[in-house]
Length: 70
Length: 188
Image 1 (cartoon, rainbow over the protein chains, first blue to last red):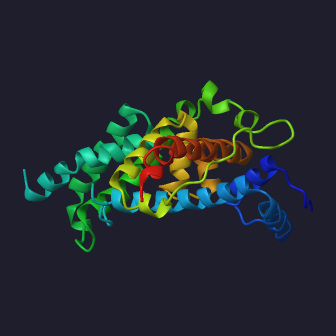
Image 2 (cartoon, each protein chain N blue to C red):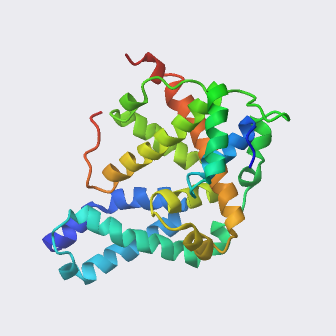
Image 3 (tube, rainbow over the protein chains, first blue to last red):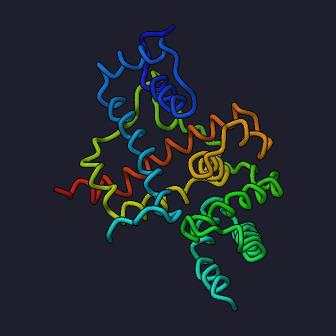
């Protein structure tokens, strides 16, 4: 288990987390990295936001959601 | 033309748009949509009317899109230079730090209520290099399991991870530039 992640490693883990469940050690590593790194804390929020945005887009593009007003 | 056929036909442009985003090839998209309309017109009775017609057609189209990908596996997975570019190298310095840190996104919830934001999102997805765009959409829209995507496209799971990783990094960058750098920061 690696505690001192750098930004590149943290980013890779966040993106892997979109596809598989991270181990406890990996999650701990990320948490401690985010405590000291604003850029990566932003990054993870943005990845989550993108996931939500894809879901919303899909809902209305497929027909069961109402598109937001223009 | 029957009412049903008429209604189905009206949805063709929307289905085409959907198929193009997924397949990124006009000829394949045409085929997928034609197959869908044909299947719908052959079996109108299977449209039970509990869902919207469009939702039902999109459900059929998803299968036809996968059929197309399977039929054209070799071209669908032909990597361009863009697909294989090493993004990590571009985004991170040798010591592992961001070359340019992600900026703060102002009021992202507001973006989700703006139609124009989704236009930007769609444009960004369309700008992904071919293979990245296809696997990203298979995962996010068709919601295929990763091993299914690997099987359909005959790629390894390592390849798939790398492609998805790059697609998400690019998408983040594009959304920041296309929305948050400009409009997002102007919203109250």
